[in-house]
Length: 330
Image (cartoon, rainbow, N blue to C red; front, side, top):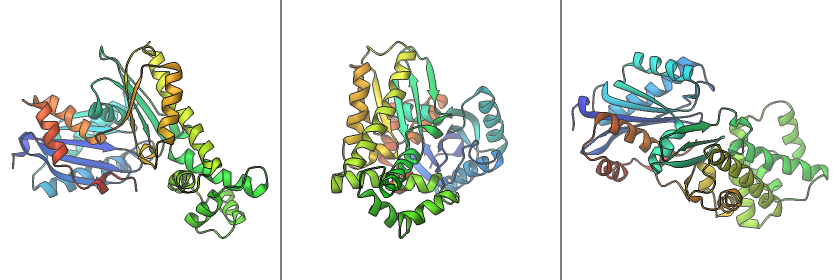
C-alpha cells in the first residue's frame, strides 16, 4: 500500500449521492465510500461538506490509510459560480481530506472521464451539460436544470399521462397500471390527492422515470413512446446549444451521454437525442459514457500529482473499481 502522501482521491458529488474513490498510481482503487447529497443548493452547506467527508473517510477506512492524501479532486454539483468554487475550496480545506484540493463542477469530471474534449450530457435526477473545446475553453450549464428533461421531469410526465388519461384528456396508457403499482395507490384519484397535498416530491417522481421504458419496451405503449421522444428532443437542445456557443456545429465533436436515463431499456431515448442533434450538428459523434464520472476526478488528481503514466493509471483504476452498486442512484 502506498503512503498517504502518494495517494489520490476523487469525489463525484451530487443531489442523489456522493461517491469517493481513493487510489494509488501503481495499484488503482484501494478504497471506496458513499454518502448522501453534497449539492450545496440542495442541502445546507455544512451538511453538504459532511456528506463529502463521510464518503472520503469511509473510503480511507476501507483502504486502511490516514488522511489527508496528497491530492483530492472534488467534482461537485453546486460548483457553478466563482463564489461557489471559493466557498467549496475553503470548506474542503478545513476538513483536512487532501493536502491539495481541486474543485470542479461535476459535469467536467464526467467529461474528463470519457473524452479529452467534446460535450457531456448528463440525464440523471436532473439534466446538465458541459463542453471543453479542442483549444481548452470550458463551459457548463445546469443550474436551472430543475426544469430540464431529467428523471424528475420524466417521472412527472409519466404521472401527468396517468392523470390526463383518467380525466379523459389523454389517451389510455399502460402507465396507469405501472404507476399505481409503483406508488401503492389504488386509484388515480388517490394519486391526485397526494399530489395536491404536496406528498409527492422530486425523489418520488424520479423513481417513476424507468416506468416509461417499461411501458414502451414491454407493452409498446404509444403514450410512453411520445414522452421519451419528447425528452430526447429537449436533451438534444442542450447539446446543440453548447456546440453553437463555440461555433462547433459543423465539427466532428464527441458527445458523451451520461446518467441513469441513458442506461434505461432500449435505444429509443438515445436515438431521439441523436436524431435531433444531427439536425443541427450533422457530424457530432454521440455515444454512451464508458466511465463513471468519479474516474474523471481521479484523472484530474493524477494530473495535479504529476503521475508518470496517466493512461496506465486510468486502466488500473478501471480494473479495480468497486461493485457497480456504489454508483447507482438510490
